[in-house]
Image (cartoon, rainbow, N blue to C red; front, side):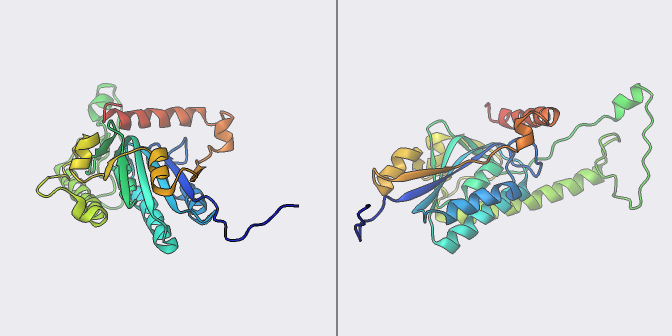
Amino acid sequence: MKLWIPFIKSAPVVSVVRLEGTISSATRGVTLNDIALAPMIERAFRRWKPAAVALVINSPGGSPAQSSLIAARIRRLADEKKIPVIAFVEDVAASGGYWLASAADEIWLDQSSIVGSIGVISSNFGFHELIERHGVERRVHTAGKSKSTLDPFQPEKPADVKRLKAILEQMHTTFIAQIKDRRGGKLAEGADLFTGEFWIGQTGVDLGLADGIGHLVPKMKERFGDKVKLIPYVRKRPLLARFGAQILEEALGVVEERALYARYGL
């Protein structure tokens, strides 16, 4: 017979949500996107009545739209449940990765963590000279004069570049608004933080991009006591991917991911 003792408080629980990888609407690999992460994030806020939700972030960024959607879901649940969100950055939270971190009420770094890169980038290749050298004729027919904008198999057009830059500027403005809204008065006055530059460790803290240097376990024990229970939430890989049914797609995803991490020397 189990003796029930009333008024004895159980140890506080902290949900630990791991957000690792590039941010993309693609379903291959372990990319981060709202539809794939939604069930995990929802459980983290709703199960066990957590005292806080900790985000463990290691992402070089990716899709602005998916970054916005994931961050908005986290904030929506945090406000609805009145649960504080605390982010811990591992190697990198840059570009879209920093957008995710900004969803938290506090951001903590390692001395070697990279943060920032508050900018927007579009990259592509031009193949028109290559196909000409090999005698390949490009045949494109459109309804709408802008339908073939930035076609990599045609010479770059100044009008197309102008339109693309206008779109990137609009995205950048949205990104800046997100960071100003979430970090507010914490950002260092007079510092130009929105050039796409990134910083490491204590410098990121000094600029107001993070709140301090600290790691998950000791910080949660300091905040909630030594008996705090950390409940991990990790996105599971799809069953077919685990059995190697998507080897080629996985390989392509790895190449793309490595290219993003390489921007930060990782």
